[in-house]
Length: 361
Image 1 (spheres, one colour):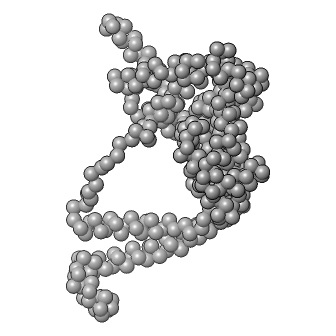
Image 2: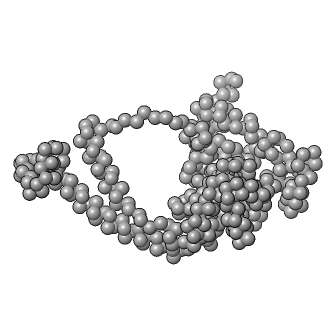
Image 3: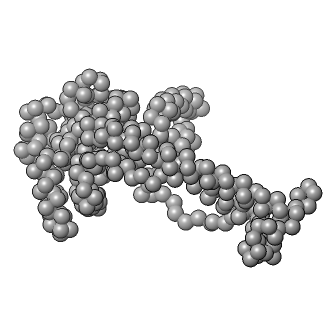
């Protein structure tokens, strides 16, 4: 590549990098590499059949330093582990003082009231992709369980889901599984096949009766993308049903083209789809949707009671923490805190046995 062409090339990549940076600012987090491909697709830059080379392109531009590393989040399944842990404090006294300060600050955050004490239903958010969880989290109370299945055939995610359902029943709560999928044949199939996928595992785990109750009461709710929401928020319809292998479900030659779930989808929506990751381009609409759906299940008054109970507990705890802070300060000023002989004298003879503090201590 000539120097002139190289300059133009780097300028073009910087434009893409600037666009990615604006995405991150609006989202409040950096998507993983795979989610960036969906963002590129939602902008019409690539199709899903381009994902393989586009993933390599993104990695290569990062290696060249043209796209900053921090714009692409680390995949947790590939994260580093292992660390050299040591205390930065120079002396034992400094270390213990730091521990006491942290303990007293944590003590002020005393929250004895369980969120679920004030609720009747137990919502569980189940999405296909982890970045959607990050997108929804500003609207989710911390107690609400949420996870990404990373594909409809992942056994671990289904076992975890059934364990959460069991936990809800054990605590006299009514679980509601809120499912968010792509608007494509596979996404619809994930929801429609919930019973088929969960039944064998529920039988092995001995919770089949819970699954039956959930199904009878229709407590599996697909709140994901629908046609009205897609069009109202101007999300991009991708005019194909391409899969990651460069094959299109709309092509009669595709092995699954004549499957009932594909034909049903084609009849209703045609050869187009909308990936759930397209919501990355509409974070406010995504969070509005999450808020609307969630608060149809959660009790607003129960939420307020939970806040009031914990705020009252934290106020009382903070008062005690402030008192302890003053007490430790007094003991430190008297030279007792780190003098074992004086501390033992206080334990044995009481606070009155303390010698007067020296001037300037």
